[in-house]
Image (cartoon, rainbow, N blue to C red):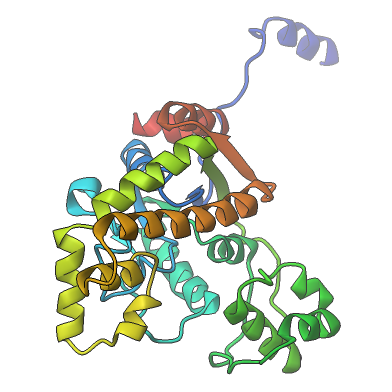
Length: 312
């Protein structure tokens, strides 16, 4: 019998392999700095994979804002659905914990429809917490912890301090509240098939894109949005802190600065923010850097050949 099996084996065609199974709960994350083109890439991937977008930008999640936070427009999205663009209110407390809880529900709903969720945004802690399986407990939003919160967090929970953006007071205060309560954010990755794609872009190119966007941003649509929010009773103090661009738009509309100065200020502030994002994302070990849709499609086909082949 052994000789028969050996003889039969010799007749098999060489290098026969079984097809790879479809990934279980596939998820794509498109990350990178502001103005790098994440939305455009995410929409292209949604068409390729049969996907729906889930926003991971903390400012685009503000329900009352649209123009100044560069929310995806109907023309940009076409027939692609984008979730999570209005889950928090202007001037109201929010947290990464609320984002992760809401987004996990949305992910299950997208998978249940047979679609691939594509998480897109530049808020690094949102995506790190979501994909890392952080559990922030059920505490209410933390009260301000005052000076020295980062040092207190390092003393109470050094392993948590190593995962939290210590430059963000709100996140430090939240983590400190959990540490004081004896709770810890967990860090066990979710059992999902995840691919994180980061858009490669040179600093010079990014700076040009930021300047171009600032010029386009400061126009009649943003002026109308700001004036409407003022009429609705929103204070200048709340609007100025809402997102980059609103403080400058207020000063321009009030005649305190001219349009060119407003554009320059928006560009400067956005560039500082983008540099911080670049530093964050370059330090993330699981990001696959691509220079556009063609390279992203190739990397997805290498890792998920059956899924990509089934959609093309």
